[in-house]
Length: 160
Image (cartoon, rainbow, N blue to C red; front, top):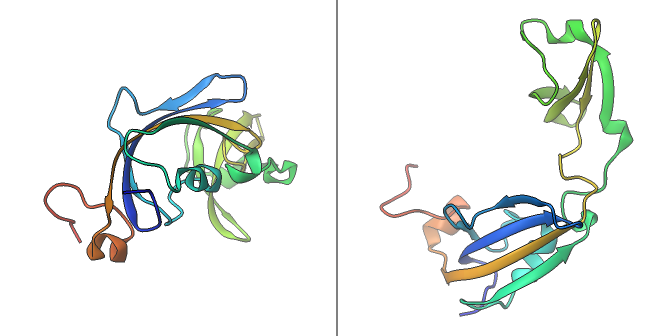
C-alpha cells in the first residue's frame, strides 16, 4: 500500500536544520503516527510522503515557506511588563498565550527588562530550511472513526 490521503502512517524521523544540526528525532522514542492529508505535518513533508511504501528510507529538504513559514519581524514586539501582571518570574524562553487580532497565539519571551518584555510570535523554526530523514514503518487505511475524529486511534479505543 502506498501513502495517500486517509492512510495512517507510522514513521520514524529526524529533523535537522540546513547545517545538519539535529532539532528533533523519534528514533529513540515512539514512532510518529498520523493520518495523511489532514494537515498534521508541515506541507513540504506531507507532500514528500505521498506514494512512499513501507520500508522506504529517504531524506527530504523542505524550504522554510513549506515548513513553518518565513520569519516576520512584525511578530516581535516589546510591550509593557504590566501587561503580564499575575505571572511571576518572567524568563527568556518562556512560552505564553497572547491575545492578538487573529485570536490567541503562543509567543516566546526573548527579552526581559525592568519595565518591558519582548515577545516573539514566530514559530521557533520559522525561517529555517529543514532536512528530514524518514523511515516508513507501517501504512494502513484509516478507519471511519479515525477520519471523523481527525486522528489515529491507539490500541483499544478513542476516549471520545
